[in-house]
Image (cartoon, rainbow, N blue to C red; front, side):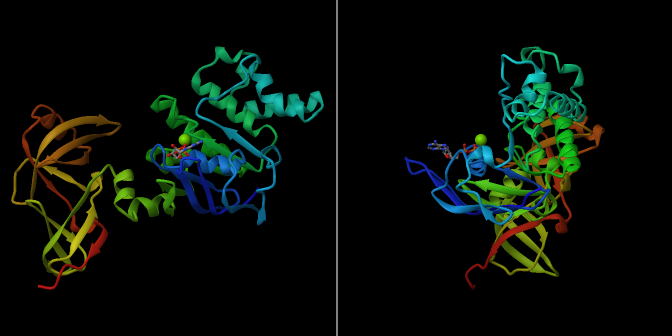
Length: 358
Ligand SMILES: Nc1ncnc2c1ncn2[C@@H]1O[C@H](COP(=O)(O)OP(=O)(O)O)[C@@H](O)[C@H]1O
Ligand SMILES: [Mg+2]
């Protein structure tokens, strides 16, 4: 389809707020997700790629050629937004066929194309419905069919599922991914949901305050967050920092407030370490030991597991457990002391700096 390159693309708004410089490449046929909290610059970046916002500096290349001078409608782009923004006075068929009619397609070709898209998106039975007679999830399917109608070379999706309930969101994530793969269409996907980004992407670019802080495959980003922000944003917040009080045999004992953590790594006494432990790597124990102890704050059932929040003297830590009996016990005893253990090799060192020589 097309390879897209953002080269130091930057927009400065009149009040001085800026987004960029953004340096990114989306390979032909790949799905790249811009992931970041609200205000990070995701929509601005997507709109620069679409051509609705003109960058103040940098360049945007499609297959190696600058498209900055090309108006949005000539960039061969399909777009879907959070609110489907369907044409209210048209039925589903007319919404999907609109751009084809405008392009002067013969009627038989229009019908064939709309039916093909309707089959792809499982919305054939909706074609004659008015758009106020379909559900939110169906409306997003229609919006996607409309975006794909003219066979664009690039698909841009800005939080397309954020207004839907979680189950529907998950189902449509899988469908979008299936269709994207099937059509092999280069796609830029925007979301603030890390779960969604991990579910759908070939590549994730994490944005913060208008700049890309990390780019990688979902596994790379999950296993090796580049800084505290990424670790916190994707890892449920289990980020710690402290000082090495003992280093021996590849294991560092890190003191953070009154707690001692044993983590695998190299370093020396006095080093300052920032590290993360994923919720699934923390184990809960009812027997208090001399390791990490905290108080249970809450226990929330998730699909196939329980999410347990434990306070380590005010610092909230999240652990996931599939042990239903343990979870039931803890639910009945909020506030009890509990032990947390983990394999030192599961700790992820995000940053370490040498302390002052003693
Ligand atoms: N037209 C505008 N004028 C001034 N600031 C803007 C404008 N559009 C967006 N911004 C600012 O740019 C930043 C990024 O916004 P946006 O791209 O919408 O973020 P996101 O989509 O990640 O939530 C925010 O600080 C936002 O307030
Ligand atoms: Mg946005």
